[in-house]
Amino acid sequence: MARKVVNRKELRKESEAAEAAEGKAEGKTAKKAPAKRKSRAKAAKDVRLKAFWGVFNQSMKRVALFDYSERKAADKKAAELTASQKTPHFVQPVKEAITE
Image (cartoon, rainbow, N blue to C red):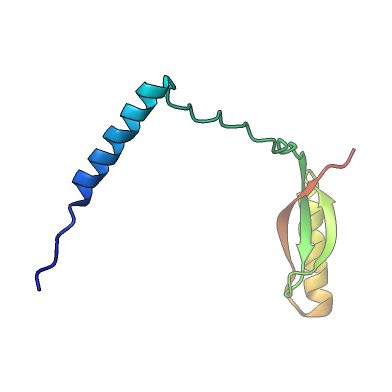
């Protein structure tokens, strides 16, 4: 039993030709795609950050906070805590958002 092979490309061409002939007969033009809407997403606010020096312990818990211009004081505090508690403390820059 022989199967009939369907040529889909030829069927598609015939279908498109028939649709085009219908469109011309009715006098209608092809519909335009609807205009794409602009996104209404809110613009991200610019968050202002201020730099500080933070003194941290081994478990990354902030123990003290100093202004950025007071690096020597932060180092001194870290050295004092390291000597008194026998666990290392270190100084690391911290950036925090400014709230107005």
